[in-house]
Length: 178
Image 1 (cartoon, rainbow, N blue to C red):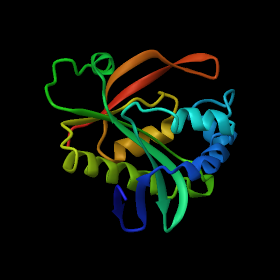
Image 2: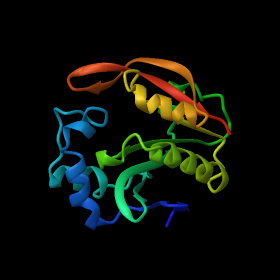
Image 3: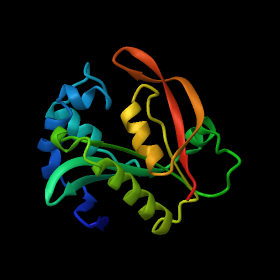
């Protein structure tokens, strides 16, 4: 177990989670904001992206009241990303996260807010992160509201930063400094 608070827990992914990830990452409602509806995952692509690599990213499953409902990953930002985000002069560690709730019936219930706050607490206290950063697409208003409720602030616009559904999309760098 990486982290637990009340009904929410975060644990490292297991290979046996691959079918669940494939289910979520072939759901158009999830893909609208994560990866893109034009890129549904099959089992092979799930295994390649989430299991068959060693890149320093900690990939985790999110459970709520014992139900497996989502995914979160965290990682130290590499030098290229630190520069892009505006942290090249910052001497402390900067961690990034990406997350989604794959079970759509759990959307709009405050669980995403609970997850983002819990992960921020974990990264700041257990990993001694100096700052936390995310880069949601500017059109993902629900996620941005969630992150702002958790204390993240928009600090930098990244024009045409992410290829999503055949179009380069603008993203916000959002920062949490504890």
